[in-house]
Image 1: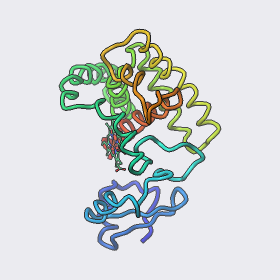
Image 2 (image 1 turned 60 degrees about the horizontal axis):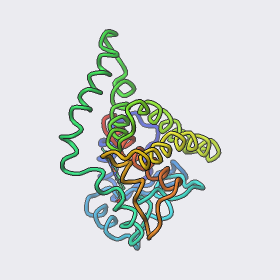
Image 3 (image 1 turned 120 degrees about the vertical axis):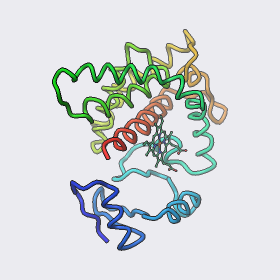
Image 4 (image 1 turned 30 degrees about the vertical axis):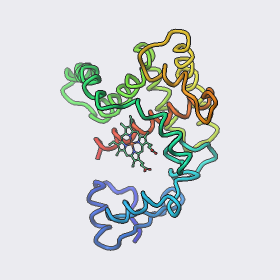
Length: 230
Ligand code: HEM
């Protein structure tokens, strides 16, 4: 079946309706894609990377760009890159982050409470995950607004390769310099670990830092904001 596009209905409702009609839906959006709609099929596809490869890209439409680390890689390359993310989030992370997240939420609420109303997505659900991930990796407090701004601008230009490259350069300028700064002044944070990590026996280069940090921001920010929107 064809999924309705530009529908104002909530995703669970669309999925429910589609699921009643067939186990696999098709959409013509983003140059066309299929969606598995039941748990068993999704689980089967996730564990069968040879049939359902994540390479070269999982996002639609496909664009002339490099793969997003881990997300758009199959084993064994996937494990190598996935290991770089491991350790950024541990069982201790929620407790360590809680006071920062609460402070961010309170600051945003303070910003709109006097108005009596707000666009909750714009005012809260979008900024808080971005700020949280910046803190999670160790972006300097002063640079958090700039990283968030350049990351959002970059993601917004994903359909336009030339504009994306320009905006990615702006994101790189602020984030890569943070990794370089940790080489000189190490801190107890993920950026410091990134500064010394090796992959396949070679140190990461600036391009690796950009794609890894963009992947982190993209994976953790869009997903979380969209989940709150839904
Ligand atoms: C509601 C929130 C979230 C949802 C619905 C979500 C969903 C997903 C999905 C569907 C994948 C692809 C899995 C696959 O291809 O097998 C994924 C991968 C990933 N996500 Fe999330 N995610 C969320 C939050 C986050 C957050 C907060 C972070 C980090 C701060 C994050 C980091 C990642 C990373 C690094 C990957 C790549 C993992 C890999 O390929 O091994 N995600 N996520």
